[in-house]
Amino acid sequence: MVHIPRRDAPPSVHHVAARAGVSLATVSNVLNHPERVADATAARVRDAIAALGYTPNRNARALVSGRTRSIGLVVTSLRNSLFTDMVSGAQAAARERGDTLIVTNSDDDLDAQAEHLAFMESTRVSGILLASMTTSRAQVEAARQHGLPVVYVNHEPEDVDACAVVVDNEQAGYVAATHLIEEGCRRIGFVSARPDLQPVARRRAGLLRAVAEHPGVTLVDVDAGDIDPPGGTDAGARIAAMSLEERPDGVLGVTDLLAMAVVTELRGAGIRVPEDIPVTGCDHNSIAWGGAVPLTSVTQHGEDMGAVAVELLHAELSEPASSHVHRTVVLGSELVPRESTVGRARAVAAARAGRPSDPRRTEA
Image 1 (tube, rainbow, N blue to C red):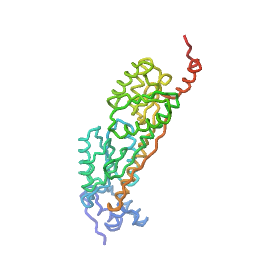
Image 2: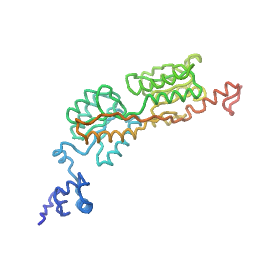
Image 3: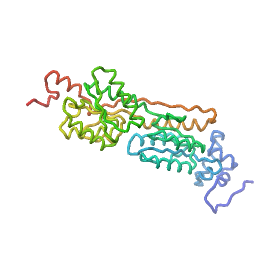
Image 4: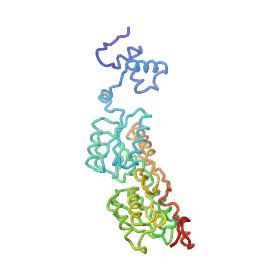
């Protein structure tokens, strides 16, 4: 005889088992290990769940297992579309695996990041994806000592053995600089700040490699003081004030926000972009795409990084800690040419031939 539980409380797993005519263990397997249950039986259990409106108690599960079916993602800034793309990719990958993604934003504040990591631990997440600008060694080691695996996103840890997924930022700098050189630029202005940040340092390394491969091309470092728009505004004003002899004839902003602010300042000073100075960004931030001159940039594959990070985390969770081998997945970078650089080579060729670069323009 099947025991019918009382219904003076919200439906429970006991109600589901009774309605489907199966054991509690079978219901548990349908919820957690459906591959262990025959299709017809699993369908009967799911029908009972739907009819009763049963919702699994994640907190109760956490008390038993020590973990929920949740993943924590701590990002450094949701103002950059790279990180919102990461959230989108991670959420889609987590959902496919039956996981819930919990997202917090540290706003480039390490103290806030520490608080978010502690919060994630308190909610008994299965693991954490950390999209930080630094290795944050002490914070990560504290989480791992409590049994939480941590996967880095957009940062390759240099003194912590952990899984990571990054975009090839050196390649991003190289691709952007090579494009400017191919457009006829010989003095590349690198507008940047915060050389302590890994993406900044690696993009500069790629730029230097491109310059070294092209004799006659030189680098002009322009310290913006900040990687946000105010730094680009200041850098753009200083570039515009330079004499023609010292002024860069091409600009690479280490971030799109810097590059877009430079474009605005140059145009305000009567300097044409791209005819006089082409400008490219380097992190494909969609927030910077709405200016008067669409900005050339380099792909960062944020959605792919988020999805791969979830895969790395699940691989670590499914393997014994003693046998798991941490690895870093590196994604490529590709140029996305737009009007802020395209056409510079044509303008240079026209100038050398002694004719206007734009047939709609006439010499006075």
